[in-house]
Image (cartoon, helix red, strand yellow):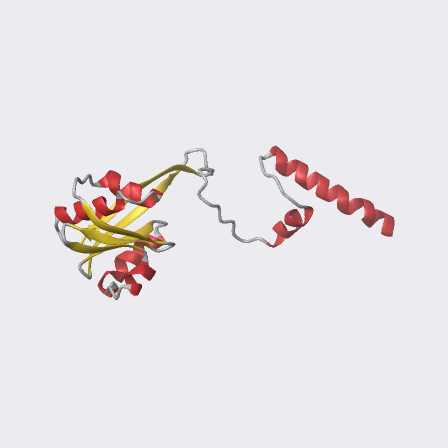
Length: 174
C-alpha cells in the first residue's frame, strides 16, 4: 500500500535520527543516515574529538647520529606554526639561528641553519628536492602502518632524521 510506504519511511528516519542523537551522533540530512547502511569504514578527522589534541614525537630515527642535526631541524621547525613542527621543537630544544626559511604548502619547510640547507617534510617534498629515501622505506612504511605521521628531515641533500609523530587517542574514545 503506497500510504504505508509514505508513513513508514519518514518514521524510520525519525527513529534512526532520534536513536543516533541519544548516542551523540547527528546527521545533517536524512540521506546521510540512509547512506550509512553502505558504510564499511568510518574515518574521523583530528579535531580533538577522538584524540588529546597534542601531537608528540613518538619515534625517531637519527640517521646522522648527530645531536646538532636534531638541533638544526628544531631551529628551522621553530619558525613554523604547524602542530607537527611544534612537536619537533618540543622534542629537541635549539638556540641556533635560522638564516633562511620558506614554508611549502602541504609539504613542509625548507631553509638554512648554521650554513646547512635543510628540507623538512613529507615524501613529496623529499622527492621535489631529489632526496633519496629508498634506504629508509621499511621504517617509513612501518611507522605509517602504525598510524604515525612521518616527517623527514634532510641536511645538505641527505636524509638525516625521520620522526614518527602521533596524537594520542583519548581514553574515552572507543
